[in-house]
Image (cartoon, rainbow, N blue to C red; front, side, top):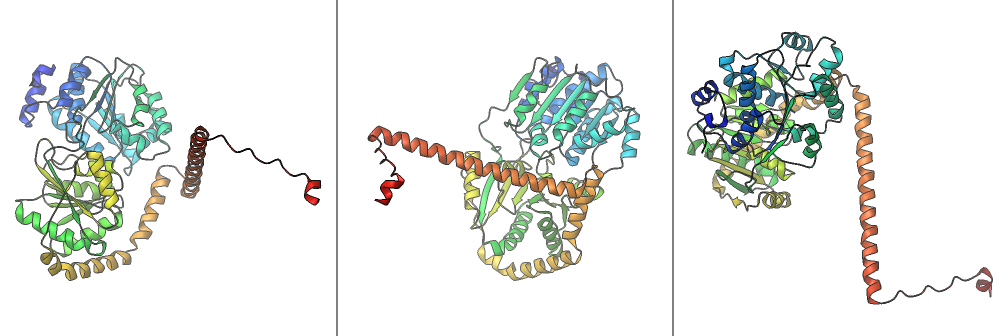
Length: 480
């Protein structure tokens, strides 16, 4: 296999890779780096943990070293956490250059961000909404010399449900030069992602992982059938078992709501498991601090909502536990992709209740693999059942006393106001969208029914001629 030097990278970048333990390029890097160095646009689709980020960071750094100036590269990403992770890779790999970067995301002071932008960093990593806000509110922000536009997790930028994304993208594209290299990277090639392919017009190079398997081979995937009401006792038993079996075990537990995430974090802490939470109800600084403590192994257990299920690269994670069975197979794939990264072994356990069997089957169909059932010692679960239930209830009462649900609504309104939106109008708009979706659904059902009737009608005509309808009675005939 070719090394980094054979891909056309400079010796200083090859040395930097060696120092960071990057010995051989991954398939996505082998495919995309030479094309990007040749000046071509690129669309790369590869599974999580495959080295997509380095596939664009390395060639961009090389081009920057040849002609360093002002704002050289713009990276758009769907989440704040992913923005900070990408920035970290630029800093580590670009350390010999004295690279200057700037992160523009929501939840931070706009004045401070504007000041950072005025210092003309080499690389700007941003969420589209916040960057568009800066461009609309400032006449001095100049991005006309940008050489690279990167959209990481491009499919999620479209699928995250942001109705303003198109308008934000138009604002951003109007502010950057037409003559540039456009790089689109994603875990999956979806129909929505194809909408962005029109941005890549300069001899576009397309690379997609050829492996048909949707999850990596190093990942041991299992499910555990549990009754809904005692699910938490099984969760605690699993955590205890993995910590006993694996040295310095690092675990991510995924939940479907912020409230469940917070309650489970409080519960595990009370049961003497050092745990940290990550969800959208936390302040931005708290989220960064939580991630930093987990990545540095201060805490070995992270409980997270799906805000952390995409893009975050924490190679040391050994176990992923799905507290709920994901409603969509792609969410499952993204969650379990947090472990077994970069060739390491990993385990993923999904708690499946009696109501989730169909969701498990959907996952198995998508990944083309039948999950094995995990067998546990039921007696050990029974021994801790009462204690876990009592502690869980205590934590729920404590969380309710803190008005968690009310704070969630207040935070939503604050975020909308920060984005320059009217919360009441947004609520009305969402209700109207839901109504339109429902109408569309009913329309599709009616169309489907009509087509089925037509199909049955045509099939019937082939068997026997239709019976003639009797002539309608006139009013006079009816009276006689």
